[in-house]
Length: 168
Image (tube, rainbow, N blue to C red; front, side, top):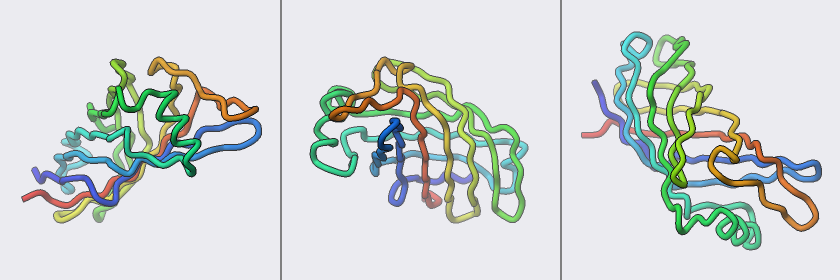
């Protein structure tokens, strides 16, 4: 089964909502390994583990970056991981696919089961996939920060972009 090294070009974007102004924060240090066979993805599934460097992010400006780093204690919790536990509802042909990825997010000493709706392309040389899920940050022991006069919601939308190549 081919192993794909995920890294450059991968990212995690979190969209936080409020009644006044939504914000987006991008984490650009996403790495991992995916074991998947394009010919048998629907029947044999895949295994994968991803790691995000939570200290490498951009919330759009210096003040937001500083506030998020402090409020969420990023330096004390520098690494988040996601372990794929299964694929469901896999549909695809010709190297493209749609699926629901089930797995566990581990960060800040917490484990949160997730289902990620995703799609992508997988061939013998590269992997490109995107996914999206909703996350209630209270499950990670956090509450949404306040920015000036408005408070963000505790539920955020997370968008994942994965880019990988077959590992030697």
